[in-house]
Figure (cartoon, one colour):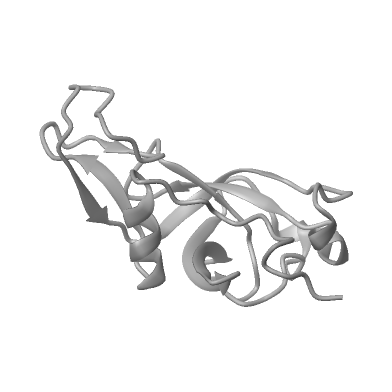
Length: 148
């Protein structure tokens, strides 16, 4: 059984985060930064928590990072994911933005199923690279193990 877009857990872009998803649709990973003090912030928000400026810009990232944490949910929280359970959900700390962490899935290829990576390959500190795939009409980031 194939899940429909209505059954999947999809991002719901808001005004502050919309640029993140627009860049993702182009295959770019960008993170919001304060245009006044230069500090990066994620998730996106209208005001810098450090200097209180409302000026922001979107900086390109290399897309490289390390697995900071992970879980393997089973059973899945949503029925649409049952066929792929157990699967992984990882938290990635970006290499060029320490302290910025993005959630996603570690997969064998960008379009592979969520259960496509052997659980034995999951480890804290493993180097990963972002890859984008279309899910329910949106480009979402997923993560691939870097070749050592």
